[in-house]
Image (cartoon, rainbow, N blue to C red; front, side, top):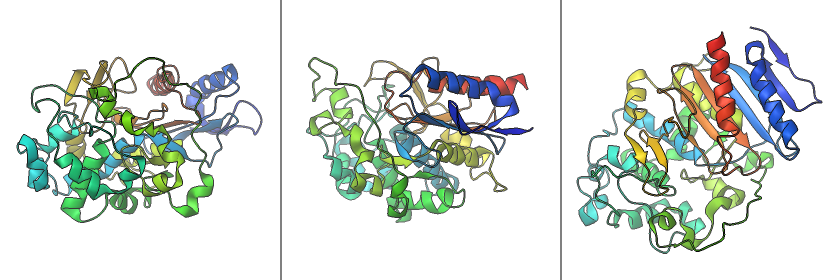
Length: 378
């Protein structure tokens, strides 16, 4: 397989191997259609980098930016190591590791239910201030005291937008005494040399480009006390700016303050399933089977749209068709996307510079489909 280094001029720059030329052409067509569109795209196939493209005025080959809820997927990769090590049994009650969690009738809630968005612990009335996400014990204590918004185990699920990362982090703290971010750094980011950060070091901050926003808030009344309002933490303000604040991205709340590049996302997912650069895969098949198995599918109680989740990871489904039935990953609020697909042997990363809310299917999913089509074509 030969590779082509694209010239400095033209719609995109970077690496595109021969069989993936059609993916580059699709990416270029998106750049041509919108002069303000800027993004990075990276893909590893069977452990080898096959795509590493950048284009547009607001992205650079070495830049990093906020990836929002892609952070949850990256955090779940690190949490998977705790399951693999036998430190966490996903069928055990959460309270076995975090006794205070048993308050208000939650004693029987399992780790499996909690991490598949079934626990009904979306947030607190009044919301959390942005800076509170840097104080994990305090936020975790408030969540442990909550009563669920629905009965866990009833089959209802809803996206825990800004609390899922708190649960992952607190469980890690309880069983290891370490921050989940530190486990991730030591066991995944550093050995696999990934530009995907759960806590951006000051030494790397010069690479950060703020997430750009165009959209105005939708007109009309949105009840901050509703299930969707509490999940979105809207009473405390719009948290989409989380990674644009240095103090927030420095701590790297795994609910949504991660910072990275498309290559960084692709590397951590490829490293999980195939390994890269001579390093073996860091997750075994048994762990992947546990963490990536679909747990819920259907109508999400928060958004009233169809969703599918494994343990924290999103699963591909018709509304969000990012991979095969074996794929697992996570999107971000700005339409960033990272996933692993064991069936195709893919580690995939896509990071736009400008918030693309509402256009995910138009770009990230098209690029993902083009990658899979190239593999099937041989």
